[in-house]
Length: 257
Image (cartoon, rainbow, N blue to C red; front, side):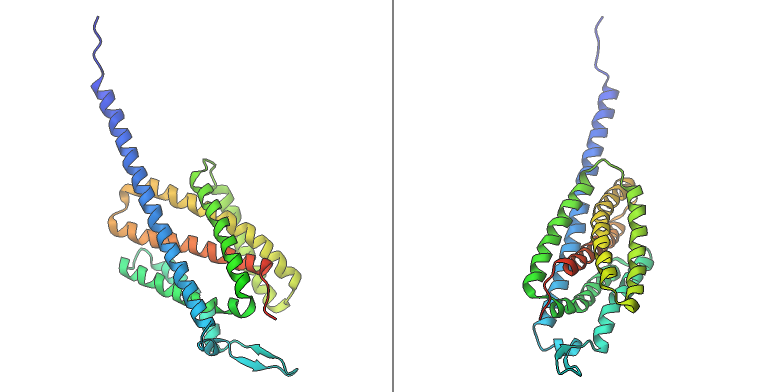
């Protein structure tokens, strides 16, 4: 008895393989777009912070003033305080309006946010030496890259870990607000240690979340929706990087005399 090949099964398997290949290519392209947005934002933030810190613009944010003891220190102006809290407003607008704003508006807000964040991070160059800022930046970049790769490749479901990390994030925010009034160095040290753990974990969690959401909703994303979502996802990774950098700098940075 002769056996003929089952063309229906072959065709179905071929189509499934082709669909998987297309989805995988789309995922790689989408993640590359997200990382490009994130990296470009970090570069812009760094340029703005360094430009302000190394020019006379610094006097608009942190002019030198004399303390009662006769010591000259950099004191924040109203403009400095505005720059510190301005990024929070942009994050809120982006999170609330991501589904309502146009792609161009979301992208413009993202660039403006990165500019404002650069101005707010000028104080890092006032507090810490340039050498330690650069050193901790590369430590942060290596840590972030390792955790993001792990989050992308691991088969472990990080959903439960993400819920725990988000609770930890709220705890850090609350403790930081309390410490504004207490001024406890011990509490600040604990916040930084926990913060490093939280934002390291969130990097892996958010990377896996971005990957999973793309795989789940890939066919529902049109070009405009994908463009907006890539900016939003880049913002999440950007914030993880910046917060991890600041926590590590508090622990490892060398302060200016």
